[in-house]
Length: 284
Image (spheres, rainbow, N blue to C red):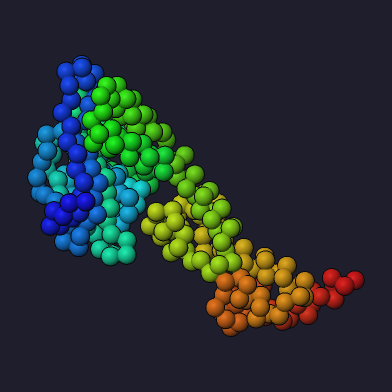
């Protein structure tokens, strides 16, 4: 990547041929970057449309009097002749702002953008970028950067496929994210994971994840983690093969006290009392 002072970036420019201009959509440039702490763009305008996809970190966008912060999975669109500015938000050297972008034009460009419910007044979508879409963006970038012979048809196919993915209902994408989140917890609950780890896995803000997860499943991510650990603790205590300290460490707790406190809140008694009550029952 080239050092541009406020970012490291690879930028590829494209000049559509006459054949492409007969169609409704053609690319103009693409690229990807890693932002530095001082990253800031604008205020300015452009003469085309440009999608920006947030791969990691957080970016704040200001346009048409609205300011919004987007995190991993978010998308925003710059409209022709609409003043905008954006900058790095909450810079984290461990997870810096990374974006890729795709600028385009054409007679169908505006209609396609509005079809995915992006407007000048609300030029963004949250949690829209999928792994499938990321792979498609890489393919577009490769095609534009490579300038392959007879690649114009392939590029148009990739472009329209991207808009087809973006047109898919947002709630389906969100539902998939939440299901993946639940599976992640069921697989790793005993490894000491936190809600912050789950939010990072899904690319969602912690509070937004908690709200949507509870709306979908009727329980918060934090409470679901506790439920998984406590149900497994129940099984392990009845088995009698492990000490209570060993059970605590096996479930990802840092020590016996933390586990006993969580267990007491959940079941209303200590692990040792629970075991003494349950073991005679299991022997009958």
